[in-house]
Length: 141
Image: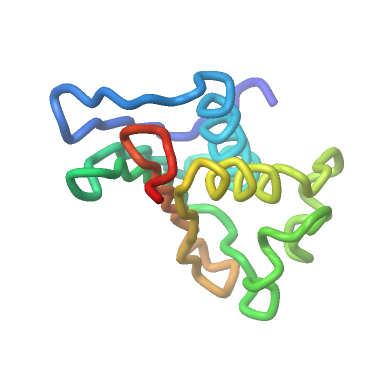
């Protein structure tokens, strides 16, 4: 809502990063990850986005939050269709549970990878999502 105070920081490690990408798809990936982070981070929390090179061929996008974390018994389900973690259902009434499922599909179809690390409890350890995407935008065969 209005008046929510979340500290947001963005940094790009490289001076210039040129990558071949479908701007619509890339925007969708970033938007979904950011909207999740915002949705599940309480007021006064912190969200950090870092873009760097994973290696010569890949870009690494990291989105970290200080939000609620993902319960241990639900971590393997996080990318499945319509999944929404128990601990956030009450906090989020309009989530479809499709965001990360779609993000994973897009990332993997682009020849990339997505994974995350998350605290198991609500003590605010937060979650970090990692997305690796090929700079040339095509699958290497």
